[in-house]
Every structure is written in C-alpha cells, then in structure tokens.
Length: 139
Image (cartoon, rainbow, N blue to C red; front, top):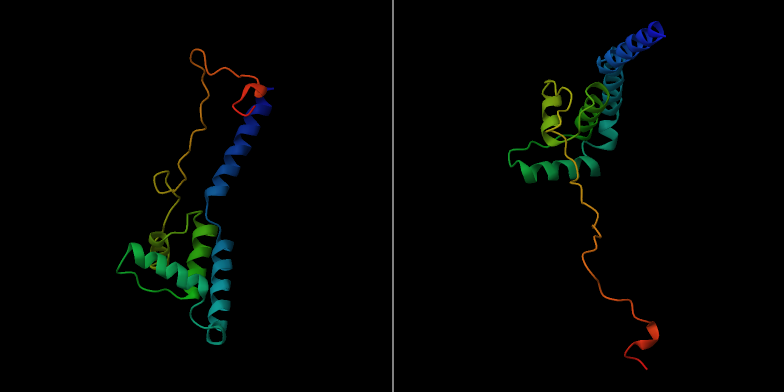
C-alpha cells in the first residue's frame, strides 16, 4: 500500500512540475497568432474596439500610457494566458510587450472581489411577536 502511495505522490509531483514549466509549443502558438494578425492588419486596421477600450482604461490609470495596436494586445494576451498564466492588466501587458517576464501571479497581484458576508440572523431576547394577520389596523 505504501509503494502505491509513493508512486502516486511522485506522479502528482511530476504533473505539477510539468504544469508550471513553459512549453515551447505555447510560444509557437503566440508567434503564429501574431504573424497572422500582422498579415491582416492592413486590411482590418491597426486598432479595434477592444484595443481602444483597453488603451483608454490604461490611460486613465497611467497618463504616460502608449497606445498599443490590436495585434500587440493579442500577442500580450496570448503570452500572459498561455505562457505565464498571469492576469491581463496594463502593467503585465507592458512588461510582456517589452520582452520582460511577468512570472506567475502572486497573491498580492491578483485582483479579487472582496467577500461580502451574508447577513447574520441572531436572535437576542424576545423579538416582535407575530400577531395574527386579522388583528392588523385594517379592520
């Protein structure tokens, strides 16, 4: 039984290491997507609605933001999702396009919605009595 557990633990460790290792195939996918986008850029235009919204958002938080094209945003998105498993934000896109590594996201770099606690219904002492509906003010 302990041998089976040991083999299972080693297999899990190997899978975890493989999941965290960047695969060359991911870089090929991103390079192919980028070259296809650039081939069609003359016909489709440099910008689109998504890149315009992203640029406007980033400019609000960083006055020095340089507009990026649709193809640049596509390349950065591909790199961040496939290669690094990072969130797509202005800083990570800028680092990705500059050739820097964004690395794996740290818990402090993730943006999460704060948990809103559900209302607690605790009963303290005698509450309002549930009177009969027929004894209301409407007689």
